[in-house]
Length: 169
Image (tube, rainbow, N blue to C red; front, side):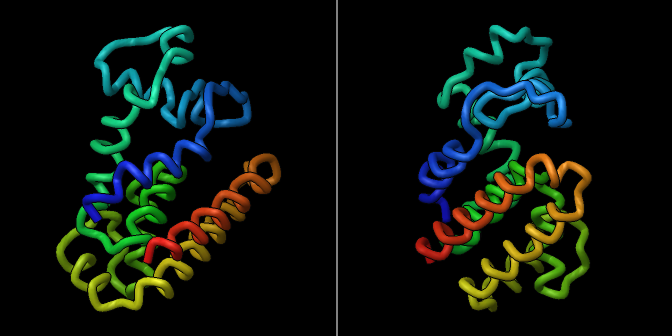
């Protein structure tokens, strides 16, 4: 829902934390969940570590809105599902997040949120859809080579996101 972006972003940023540059993380240098590559693309020029360390919530909110929330059509999704999909899109990619939903709805999983997907979401029982979505998300993450390193945190995150998403329904 349109009014959920700010609340969803606040909950997401709790999980994304501050500055990290973990060599095992393929995203590399990251602050508030925004990778250096994404930030450079957004601002249109290379940035240094000091710039990345200096990112604020105000710097990253428009990035999250434009590159993630708008691409999953968060304003058009039901309460709770919008947040679950948004968190997944940030953590695993927009296309993957939409594809998870499309597979659950027995649609062609092209990773693009379109009218047919939105129509089928409107016919679904949202609490069950959220639970199935997060099960699909967990299954995907468990298959990654980096799961042994990041899996405990990812699993805790999905559990918390599911709980919060269901409370929003």
